[in-house]
Image (cartoon, rainbow, N blue to C red; front, side):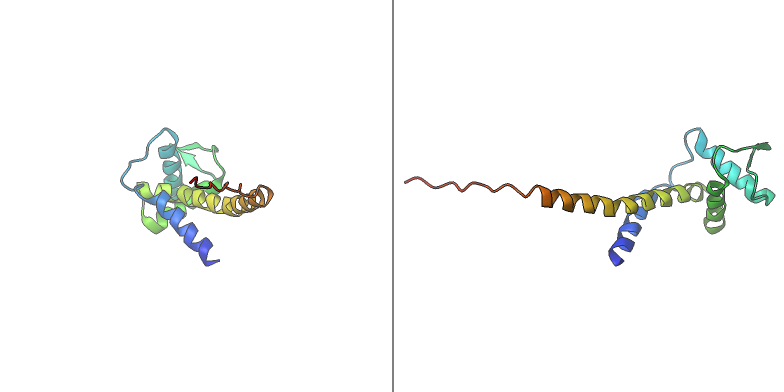
Length: 122
């Protein structure tokens, strides 16, 4: 279990490193961040809004995680990106047992080739 925790924290660190130095980019990233900010400002955690219009592009759970991140880290670019970065590292950790199982299966199925011995000539 300790190895999984270390792996999770390592993945999280790699995904989070440098995210506070970049501004929100792309078309959707600032919109999701603004919708979460408006959700927090209105204290309406059921219906997300963007520029006073309904925004149903993602389930509310996505915005809830961003609102929780805003409460932890303040309203900044890092806090807007943190929930997505954390979910990415959790997805990688879910794949680890699968990759490990496939590797063991393939190793048992295909044993390593024997290297022929070269005899020196006299």
